[in-house]
Figure (cartoon, helix red, strand yellow):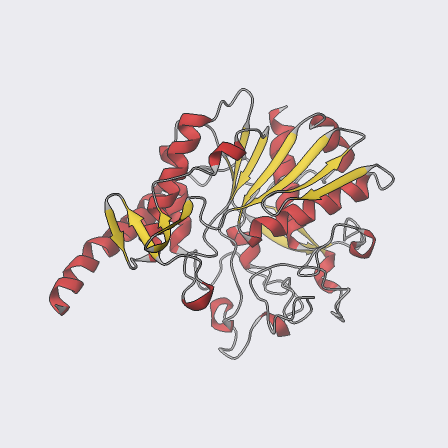
Length: 360
């Protein structure tokens, strides 16, 4: 039994190692937004007295999970850092301009709570750019929507932890790696921003499925990175077969890192994000990229339809200081996965804005 398990794992390990090696051979701009002369995703965090771009306490959309100042965070230095790419400038976010470019359009985030984090940031950025504008909010339990009425811009969030479907059947809740029925809702959007990974390693009572269906096989469990890879391939096929690039723009938010282990950034194993007040000043991240990042790159390279890749992983790895930790309104003892708003997700949206203005 042990030998079969070992033999079954070896090809899988080789597969992921080969993906990482293939990704390392691509040009640095592979799958990214910027031309070769300007890689917006490599750079450093610099102190900027003009930051943050808005007052989080004045944003009516700021969720308690991310509203660090309201829930007692005493330091504010984390708000003062601006992302500075190597060799070029990142356009400053202009919410009024983005609302005008998106006039009459529907913008939809699809993903997990990291997608919600970016959605929350975008709402604040757009609202604070034109603070007296009329807005209308709704939440039907599946879809959250805020309409900026003066521009007829709808910004929506559709929760989908895995992008593929979870279906309740007689045997229980089944995660179907080759099914995206939820995509019928996404087709109404003019701009789609996807993400997944955060929930794939989850086990125990928080796991929202009982079985995995992989083709004709029903499994109690499987390697989570392999399952993630198969689901992402299903999503890629859906985009290629369902999206018309002339009418719908697609973004993919990269892997958002967590900071629970100090040794990941060269600190003490006892450290976590809760003791950090400044970004890491480094050109590489000691723990290296997550293996799933290579899978995302590989998947995007195989697609026939264009997708803007928001390669946020490295720049976010440097922001060990930017998590809510205990300063959140949902009683997490130490949240080192999500991000304060205002804060790092504003830069994610700044990078998305740079993609929008570069295309139009």
